[in-house]
Image (cartoon, rainbow, N blue to C red; front, side, top):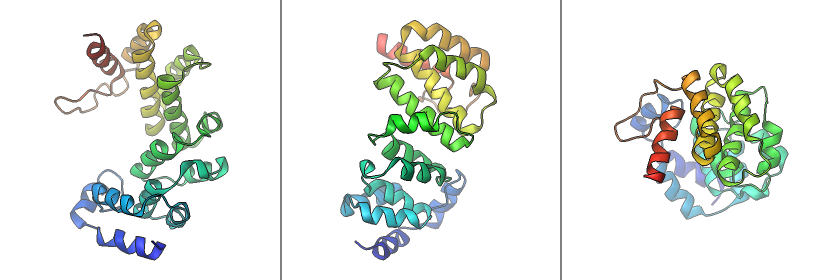
Length: 219
């Protein structure tokens, strides 16, 4: 499929009502993501097309690019540049989860991005840190991560705050020796304590999150 054909297919999926709903969340597109995924499945992996779609700077095209790209074919510099261009929340979320976490360069990027002044970049570093906390904590200084969270999370910008909170909760969930400290930090900082949570869903407030997941696992 050519870039022009892909863009035409995306344009045909545009729905004004969907756009209105998405714009309330900061996403400037009106495409049902299930239909976009079906389009991506039809295209299959196509790295050259993904690069051209990404270069348009348009949210729908970039979302499709993230679904059809090959993460391991990007260089660290390319991935750094792409992250710094991800302003729409859904583009940022998909980039981190579908590309940054899948590339063999994930740890290199995590270290490169950690402490970056750009909140979007710092948030990605914390998301990659959470992945390591869960899957590969060897050589991670978890106590130091808790120190940083305790010091910085309360006043952090929205995106890195959310990602730091995920790291805090997952340290508490996956590392019982540090659970009491993670719970204490969460209770004292009260980050996301008042976050609206639908019935039957787990609150993102770290102490509640830790308690619920541990209860399910040990109950």
